[in-house]
Amino acid sequence: MSSSTANPRKANRRRSSSVTNALKQIPLNQQQEQSYGSENTIQESEVKPLSGKPRPKSRKRRDANDLPDNYHSRGFWDDLKTGRWMLVPSSALILALIPIILYINHNILVQYGLLKPNTSNPFKHLLFISGELPDGRYTKSIYDFAFLGYYVVFWSFVRQFVTIHILRPLAIALGIKGGKIMRFLEQGYAVFYFSILGTLGIFVMRGLPTWWYKTEYFWIDYPHKQMTWELKTYYLVQAAYWIQQTILLAAKIEKPRKDFKELVAHHIVTLWLIGWSYNLYLTYIGVSIFVTMDVSDIFLALAKCVNYVSEAASPPFFAFFVGVWSYFRHYLNIWILWSVYTEFNLIDEKERTRFAPLEDKWLDWWMKWQIFVPIFLLQLINLFWYFLIWRILIKAVFYNDLRDERSDDEDEPEGEQTTTEKLKEQ
Image 1 (tube, rainbow, N blue to C red):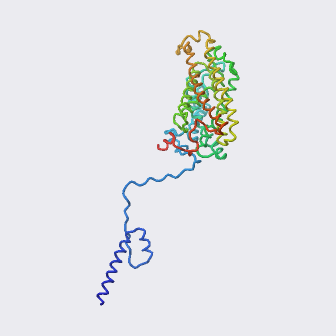
Image 2 (image 1 turned 135 degrees about the vertical axis):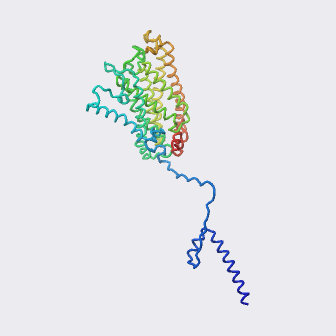
Image 3 (image 1 turned 180 degrees about the vertical axis):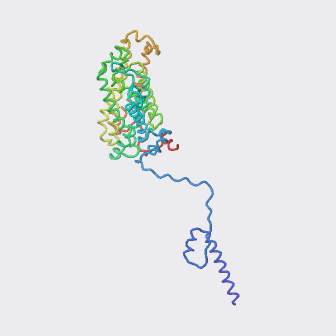
């Protein structure tokens, strides 16, 4: 009897032991068994990790109102190497301050006799216009390229500082969300810039014989080699702005619109006009075109900003903008084209019959078309946009729909990857 009863107990103990050993292989069970306080010491089993590549860490979901990562500095030197300085105002500011500090240091060295009193300050060409004539007026100079380079940096700082530290908080305070924030920043900066430069353009034009499109004076007394300080400064500052904007556009720092190709063409033609008109001493006609573009852009950008805040309030602004655009971008620009076509021969014959760049002679009969063609191309681009503008206006009046025909979906989350996101991989 005793042996027969002992055998089942041993069998039960063996079965119990095998179950216990099996449970030991389950990691979640080890902690439970250790809490029982049994006299036997439980040996921890080692669990080997699964083979294969580790899973990538999931990126934290970013709020749509957060500033995109490529607008944050990774250190000045890294920003400088990758071009991120054009997006980071602190890095652009450092670049802009370097020539100012060097300019001041040079003057201090001259003042304390460490440099000769008549030593020219080489950094002045970066900060101030060059080519001053004895009568106080100015002409073009090789140092104009240095001035342009510095003010590309200057406009990069101004643009990012205004958009990030002024317009962005304003957009959030106005309740704008998602992808519309970046659109509001773009258009808000356009209002800021063109309001200033449009006003300056009218001021400069007011001092010229061409005031309010007396087009015959584009050609009378050509070449207009002498410029006032205001005219030359205005022209080069405008050129620097458009160079900087073209760089931003080429790098796709702003999310491209549906009319991206037309916008690229517009910037290229604009730089073509600025460069040739400056080099050929046709700054009078250049200022007139600047005014037609800048004044109309003020009201375009303002109407779009209002639309991002309140679609219900935007139709009156948009209707007023259409009137301004029609007058400046089409009536006045066509008037300028007509002047090129019909009044070019008002130039003295000896000044329009020889193309000799080495002698600073630029106009021959065919140069009339070199002037006409870029203005005409600009008008074609403006007509394309004019068509889109009228489509928007008709939809607003009859269908209560005031969406920008040129834009993609503006409700997409801000920070959608553009070319600038590639900076994050560097």
